[in-house]
Image 1: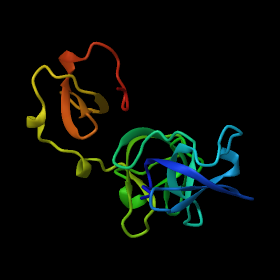
Image 2: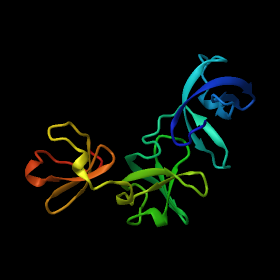
Image 3: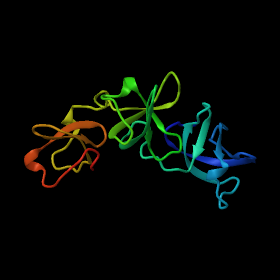
Image 4: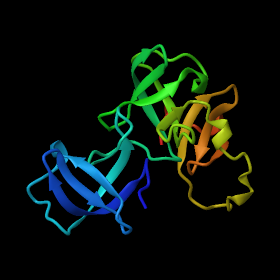
Length: 187
């Protein structure tokens, strides 16, 4: 099964003038455009690619390395803003849309902000949002004392810095526990 917004391991099935067609275990096909095809790729070989929809709504594969996958949060920069929303640089040729309704504050070109990416159920396209709380859990009871965690700094508060714990929970790093300058997106 093809998984949009995720890395997929697919088999090189056939060639076309536009690139290579890759298939999953049940025969679903997706195009890897010529610009991502290398001489080392061989028919029957499995390769890892990232899947998204192109501007015409077709599933397409890329060997580019996105900064995030569906269900993940990353610090992204605004490339452009138009009448439908902000378009983010995220490591893939097609920019990630954050519609105005998904923006906690209006974004401008050059702004950096934390973004959560999801697959829109209506359009089946990858979409971003800066409204992260809906996707984060405030229950820290799952954490074990002394266990290592990954923190991504979110925003400053009067007490310290709100942080995203292991990409799924919200916590607070108190000012007294901060020993160097930190910025949103720092890990």
